[in-house]
Length: 357
Image (cartoon, rainbow, N blue to C red; front, top):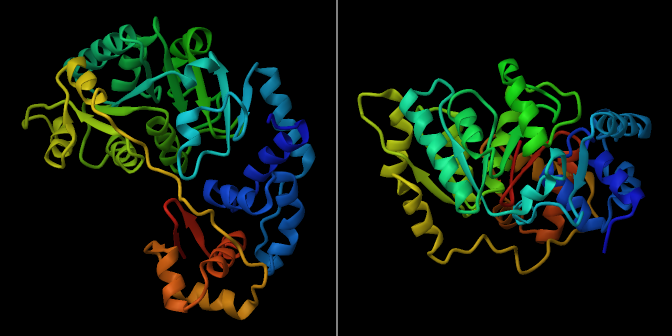
């Protein structure tokens, strides 16, 4: 069933509510069946009004929609028919996406190519060549419009199809020298972002951006990267999502090869050309299966139980079922308490049924 206009508006508003990330968004939809009902229930869920999750005014949400319309952007919300199937399979999916360009590319078989911003000429040549070959074999190439490897991959795949995932808004051209590349992407390819229209990219936005890059893709190829880099974060996210991780080996004399070489030591698939990618994809793989039993909630939660759950949380993520065992309490009661604590800023809900303080 298609979503009504009121429900799509409510889903954007819920996604823009402070302290409601993808995990809380998905749990609220599961609990109340719609964003309209979740917004109505939100005031009753928040017990400590001083730290309440207050939805933005409807006027602010309408302004975001209007700005999107002014630049020709299209909004996809979770539940739309055109929402990318690969992202919908994530736990949890991004609640909303803004797009410009060829939206249909988001539902075609895709491979991500990521790597160093300060890339070698050889690394850029490899990324460009792999992107061309992947495009010719029917794959869309996903990357992040950054300098170096990203830009080379986009250039190689522009004739056949590429997707740029941005950290800022879908209208945020970063780096500025990629203005011409951006113009070609929205004309020939697709640009996508989870951030509001007009938002400028900040450091905290890039983990979400990287999660979408890997989530859209069947596999992630790392060409060049330092050990501590966003590219290796993307590779880790890909592995957690059940995607294949490929690494292009490099000389131990080049620090940009340390990331891919480390991934190979950890079990990544050696990638010297598209044949290695095709071979891996011809092996049957399945994405992570959703839980067989839907998460249930208990409406009878008192402040004393909330405090008991909060006292068990720490900066180290803790599994939800471990909390239930420690409290000798039903999972539904713990799930409800964690959701309420997250809405008041006392807990952070994380993918995989984890929570932290």
